[in-house]
Amino acid sequence: MDFELMINSFPKLLNATVVTLKLLSASLFFGLFIGLLFAVLRLNKNPIINKFAYGYSYVFRGTPLFVQIFIIYFGLAQLEFIRESILWIVLKKPYWCAIIAFALNTGAYTSEIFRSGFEKIDKNLLEAANSLGLNKLKTFLVITLPIGIKRSIPAYGNEMILMLKGTSLASTVTLLDLTGTAKYIISTHFNPVEVFVFVGSIYLFFTFLIHTF
Image (cartoon, rainbow, N blue to C red; front, side, top):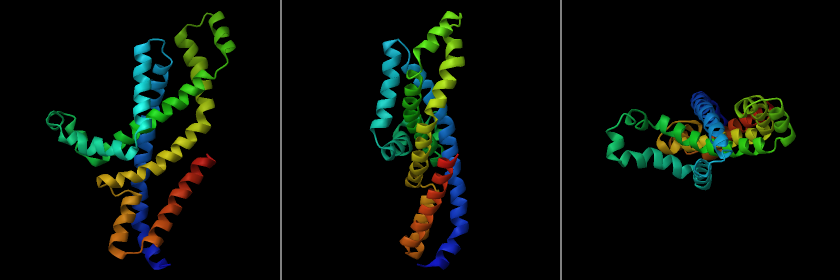
């Protein structure tokens, strides 16, 4: 084991870790709101709205994140009307393309997690709220939302870990995140084992933190 390489690589990997954590935080932040929105749409009685929400979830959970990030970064850039629109300000940058792909992906999984939590709420609680004169909106905000989120936390913790590991795909669109920086170091020093063991330990450390909290 080349410990000297591992020590010398630490500053670069530390900076790359910051990039990875920024990607993770932004993706989970936007994905949380997307997931909550589509979980509510899944509960809607309107079949069109319900099917639309289900379709979004099905597509993003049924296709690889690798493919999704490539379509958003490389595919949309091939469309002339995208390049000529205001959207190009965002979509021409790999950082935001990665966040969009990650947020949409984790949003799909999060919507299913929240939907499951909402549907498992005791019907007697909802009936009691109705008997007290609470309308559907108040019932959702006071009972369904807090209880459903509380029950979804364990499953959502697993989604956070999956998203942490998923951010490694940011390197495929030229971002020097933790995995991207590791690849760069390996390409110049040709010591893949030492670098990837070090990088894997960093991912494992943050996985431990998520499990702990």
